[in-house]
Length: 286
Image (cartoon, rainbow, N blue to C red; front, side, top):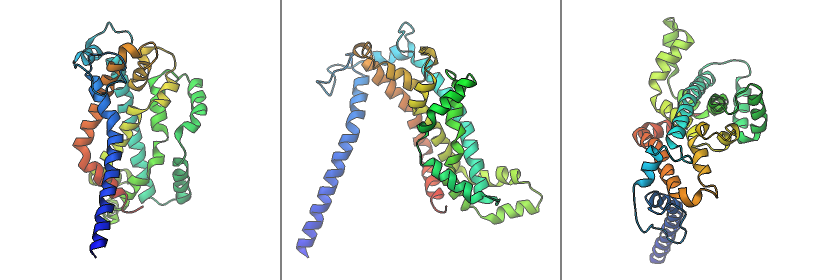
């Protein structure tokens, strides 16, 4: 018995040491970026983990210095925020409506559509990027923020599964009572289901906001004109790592990475309770 306990303690110790190693590996780049954001040295310094001196000048230049033609952070931030907000509104609406239809409505081909949606969701979206790019170019939507909104929200309905699982947990008798009183399907959805679905709505909104906020691949393909004022934050920060600018703008790149993480971090902390409830509620029943 004693030997078994010793082996158990050793096993737990090794597991925790391994987990600690993973945490250090995961956190080290983030900590390095944060410290370099306050570094007085503007370029890339790979010899020291912690800078020799610190300053807020990188943040001041990014936010207020209009003479820097390389870093147009306020414009990039505004572009990203606009795209993320509109994409979030459209994508969240699509997801909630498709999820409700799959959960509560019965029609021919419903199960086939659900299966097709799940299968298509298994494939990365960028596999269709060439076709999507030429379609957008045909309609003059390349180098256009609205083209990106269409990309981020167009196929969002395929992500219906978690929201459908949440809607399945809401009692059907509530909907039936409303229909008996003369409510239409839209009224049932808007006045019965939506007020009871705050957790899944928060989860859907945050997920829909994160995609355009952090995306680089689609944005770099669509916004390829080379005009800096059209870029999103992801493209702009990436350009600051160019060989021509990295020795003068790396610390500003780190500062920009830190700034762009603040809004979504605050949003997640505030909405964390509902976010977790949305995930767990949607996983109860599929």
